[in-house]
Structure formats: C-alpha cells, structure tokens
Image 1 (tube, one colour):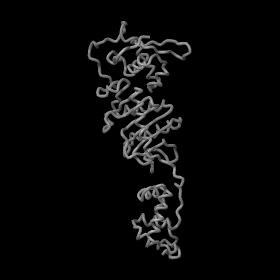
Image 2 (cartoon, rainbow, N blue to C red; image 1 turned 180 degrees about the vertical axis):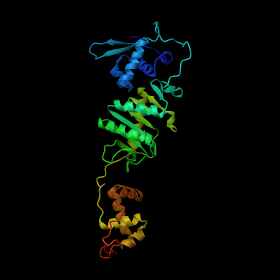
Image 3 (cartoon, rainbow, N blue to C red; image 1 turned 90 degrees about the horizontal axis):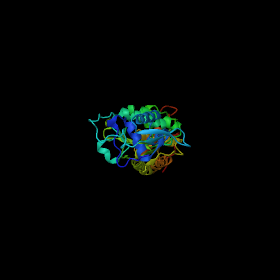
Image 4 (cartoon, rainbow, N blue to C red; image 1 turned 120 degrees about the horizontal axis):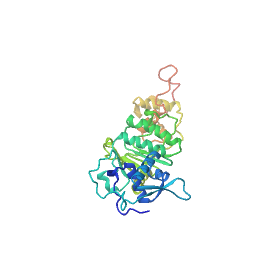
Length: 344
C-alpha cells in the first residue's frame, strides 16, 4: 500500500461526497480497515460508509481485498498520485461548493476530520444517527437557562434510547433538577434520567459520543448557524478533558436520605405562617414560642432537607407539597388547647 505523504488533498472537487472524502482521509492517515472499523472510528451509519466506499472504488481511490483471519473486505487506499486515476493537482474548473463542507475555513487549524453541519435540523438528524449507534458513553454540556420544545422533545426520546441500551450518560447544565426541567417535554417523574451535575455556568454547548465524535456550535451565541462535527482524535480528547474538568467541580445531585419527611404539628404551623409572609417574630407570637425557638425549628428543617438557606428551604418544601399548614377541624385558628405550650 502506498501511503500519502503530506496533506491529503480534498476529493470534493472531483466528484467525491463529503462522506467519501472523510473515509479516504481515514484510510490514508491510519491505514487499511474493514467497513465495520470505519463505522466505529468515524461514527457514521453503515449505509453511509458503504456508499462512501463504493464511490471511492468507482474513482479508483480504494480497493476491497480479502485478508486472512478478518471478516469481510479490508479496504486499502490507492495512491492519490502516480496512476491514471490520480487526483489531479489542480482542478480543471472551479469545484462546486458541497452541501456540507468537510472543512470550515476559519477552523482549518483544527486539522482533518472537521465538518460543518449547516443548520440545526441537520445537526439534530446527525445527532440522532450518532445516538442510534452509540455503545458506551454520551456526554453533554447545556448552557441554556431554558430549553425550547423543538430541541427538548427529541432529546427526551434520545435519552430514553441511550439509557435503555445501558449507555453511560452524563450531563452538565445550569438548570436545577428540581423540578425536572424536562418534565415539560415528556419525561415522567419515575423514569430513568442521565447523571447530572449543576454549575453556575458551563463553557459551551457540547455533545461527545463514545469519545469519538464531538458536536458543538459554530457560533456559541447563534446555534442556527449550525454545528461543527469533529472526529479528529486529539481534538475530541481535548473536548472530553474539558468536560471532565468541569464535571469534577460540578455540584452532584444526590439522593437525600430524608427527602421524604414528616412534619410535626408545630412545624406544619410554622411553615404555613412563614409561607404567608410572617417574620420570625410574628410567627413566634402566633405560635406562642420564642423567636429563638422559631430559628431552631427552621435550622432543623434546613439540615433535614440538606439545603443551605431559607430560599432553598422554601423550594424544597414546596416541591414536597409541605408549604400549606394542615387544615384545622373547625376551619379556623387552632384552639389554645391545640397549640403547643407557651415557652418562656
């Protein structure tokens, strides 16, 4: 096999598809491979790999051979120079612009294995293809404070498919998990969810599939300009390292062993009074206890629910539907006999 020395010329201008161009670069750079190996290395579907190989064979730039001990054909790249089918050093006429360019001009410094998915729709279609063949891991970073339905609804279905196959899913985001932000888009309370860590901010929108393919927006502030798809191993590894650094510092969502708690009557009354806008002083007067006792009860509730301040306490109690005080039998204020004894 002849190995290409130096940069691999683009095949787009001579009739090759972007997929065929990408497969050819893989063969020239890393050597012969079966269709299955190309599928795993490039994160492409089998029909796309097959079509790309057929195109390369028709152009005389790759040949399938039988190899002892290997299933299927082993594809070997043909030299890009020195044969009657060689790729010319100069196009006879201006090359037509491909629908999905293989290299984005301002990102050429990232090297080979970089494609521009020009619209959000193309990106969603490509991500769906990658999800369908993912085997081991799916990483995501979401900087959005709110999701739009067009993106979130397909994401719920993709999450289900990945988790059902046992794919390890980890997500970094800025949205709290209680209540689940995806509950508005079809995810139910009891179903499995990806491992999630929350941060004040994440550096970029990112998807990484099986540590082989990465997708991120061309312009972070405008995802409608499309995404970059990266398959170059050093670049993907750098993006995975970026994810791991932030994952290590993110706030893990942990199951609270006391997430299901029972409030005693006095705690119920105090929670209801505070929800109605009472201060510690006025709530203490209503309960006929000292202000110090009110503070002690509030601190105890915060510790039991694993929260750090009163705002978080209110959110946690509201999520458990414990904000309203229990109804009184006579529909009015508790009788003196029903109140806790006064404290000095």
